[in-house]
Length: 101
Image (cartoon, rainbow, N blue to C red; front, side, top):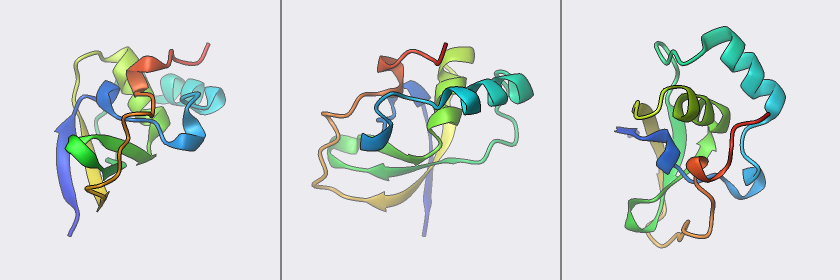
């Protein structure tokens, strides 16, 4: 059964293959279409690791958009996997990478 939680998107860890952050074309398309609005946004899928750290599996662009356009706003995440021994501390957070130019 999936678990849902509301979190600050800036605290979410980027997956290893997306350490550069959001794809610019996707980011700009979302900003144009939705701006800072998160109403109706599907939950960001994450894996929960050691110390409650969460790594994004699906939703880097959504997390980046909300973090930078609506600071302090919480987003819904769906914890799709729990790996209590996984250490995500080496991965950058959404807040560590600037939004695409």
